[in-house]
Image (cartoon, rainbow, N blue to C red; front, side, top):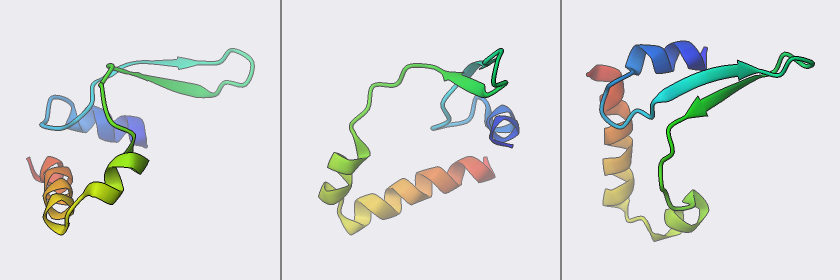
Length: 67
């Protein structure tokens, strides 16, 4: 399901690029391979966010679904 969502949103703003999907030959567990994105650990970032920052972040996430 996540793969289909990423494929449908590909190329949109704030959407990470799915590069490949591989499966473990024994367990058949899929692994998603994404582009590298330099980021900050969310556990460190979250306590520093203001109400405005959180609302803006949510707006940017939801904007992907509309575009």
